[in-house]
Length: 497
Image (cartoon, rainbow, N blue to C red; front, top):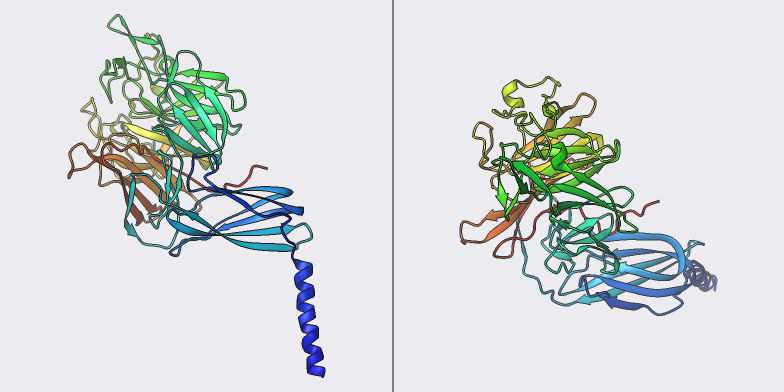
């Protein structure tokens, strides 16, 4: 009898604990796959709880991939949970944990089936030397993981799109920008000011949310041999995040030398217009309210957004004896940063002028997609290749480069350089992960020697200290590759406080 009584007490105790540590959903779950017809690898789960609760979401990984997890911290009764990172042609396992203010929990395991996704980009893994999972956001809206699975497929409609601060931004050359949530809900449209067209190459975003857009204004010219020649791809504009209004405009030709003949000839024409700058990427330095711009034909430029003063230039110190659209401005050669070694000792004049390079330093030529990191570290893709001035050193292969800027002494040190085994003449990107000490390099539009008129992209992840290759993959879809670059991506970035 004592054993029976003890067993009954245990059972009753378990029932009591269960009833007092769990709650039930107040309504059934409504699950909509691709709710806005923009991202077929997403879903929206809607339900209510009779008490305020926060939600933990887990999307289970397959083939050893880590789970995608996120906690929606607000305690609410009505819940709309975006589910991201689903697999195509797969019955996805999704876990919802409802956590009430009294710490009681309810756990539901769900299955969300996704059919075949129509897309023509392949992601073929060449090498993987660790168990890490990283996600790669390509500029046509696709995200692949390091198992080769497609995990995100945003409808770019033939445009370049960006992942910025937990949102998707679509850039159209003529119409403007469109801002979406990651599951595809349209949030806002932004029109360009009259006479402006974007270059659809690499917008940036300031901490206040405002967008930095690169492109051209009509009726802007430079003087060449007494003739006014129209230019393009030499402006940065700022669009207000809330209103869409243009709140700033920077004319790079007024502060640089658009007549410089180092990377391209002084009368370099593309699409019928003078392409002296070919701006292709922009970032923001909040420490001194400056815009950092990558120009394929003029180096990397830093400009104070308020005063429009040229702060510094990264490129061989040659051809900056004048400035301005009419070549009537001052000498700006002192704005070029001084190249130094690891002991902060300046290199000789031949390296400063770009005539030579060494294992410790190389100036970028035909650079793309500058990105700023803490401690004034910048990354860029040094495309290199043939340039106009044969006295300036370049390579017939591309390079991934990381530099550190001393803003006080106006010096530049090369922290990391990887000579790549490919040449890319367009786009491409370098991302630095200081905490993990890793570098991700994406080489775009590599000519395919096996198929005339075709190109491919190559993704590589390196150890920063040893330069050991940790992961590599080929991105291919036939024909000209539209995947201009790879960007950082998080399915559930940390919410702003």
